[in-house]
Length: 352
Image (tube, rainbow, N blue to C red; front, side):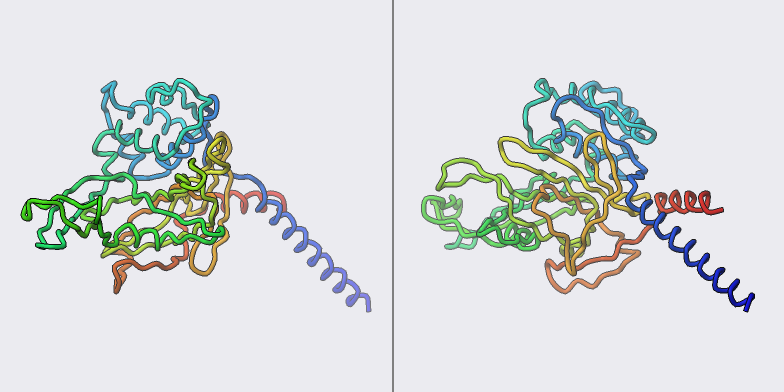
């Protein structure tokens, strides 16, 4: 009888210890343990902070900037290099970059996409080429079938969105719409050199060079003809985690969000680390570990504004492409979970 009571007491102690461990583990999950640092910036420059964090968390871009020895005062790389070195160990200040970009009123609302492009234009070709793609604009005369081609590079592909009754907007549909053939006619007719007059024409964009990082802009700011003013579209965007374009596959790794409207708002960035495989939320001087709510096919967001897709390594993950554009979800693969290791060390210290 005595042994039986001891056994029961021992079993209760084990259950209680297990319960305490689980409770502590849950508390650790909710702790804002982060492996990265925020930005200290003046005024309301969240639009700049969000894209700077995306650039820092883009491995190839970060390494290219750190390798650069340029002392050219017309480039921004010396400021980026200093910022990236600081961010690896502490919170960093953005005052130098703000001055370099010519921002005098730090309280004025500005566009994150505009400053993303400005930074790339002031960066060396070695670093900026990671985001650089090429498009061909093809026009075909509907009468004589003569074609004209015009090539140009791009940093960002803008995707149209619809806001009919706040329905969900699809990034995939936006991409298909961007690349589909459009007919121009009437007052928009194009001049045909072979016909020597204006003709109806079919026009389309072709992606002739895939960038290493594909950046998509969701056109949430648009002109409302009825209200005769610019408005923001708040519809929920259906964002695939993996894109198949031609023979190139892209994986989502960063999202810049815009909350608010045209008169006032706030930018944040949610980025998947190439070092830990975890998602983090970058909100000015704060960085927290963040978990996306992943649906069956995609992420959904009514605030997503800029999407960043990294080209997948085809050699490691061969994919058979049967359509021009298709989408599916890839389960995230962690390289090394630094945050998890920290939490496990804390657990071992408490319960030894």
